Image: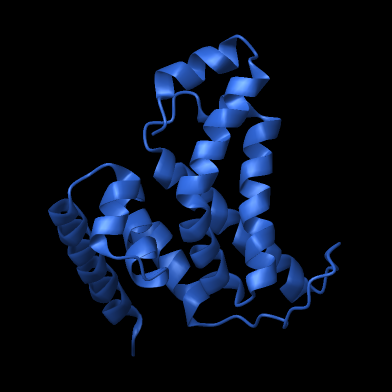
Length: 174
């Protein structure tokens, strides 16, 4: 899959062809999970497609952004989440998007609360695993393959992350 050392060398040498190949590999591996996360936030497949494209266009514009990143999956999922939330905030403010995609105006809902809670309670890996497992509906073995860890580790981190979220959410329920 993605060889970080070879990618770093390609970036250092400004080897655009090799960078394109590496980013293409990442796109193939992560387009579906990124789309699922964005769809769960935006409730629009068209806007979710925009998020997928934005994440990878941003990498192509600044290939050095991945150099030194330890967890590529966490980085990509976080970029997708932030991109989707930015679009949602723009829509809620009434900003127009330059897109011919039909969409419904998203309303603030419990998913906004949950994402903000995840940001404050979970570490980056737990957050990514919970987003992929519960937000995107991926199976543990699919997540394990994407993250390069064991399925049992995914189960454990998803369970612990969900327990942390439940505990913190109970504090806010009156």
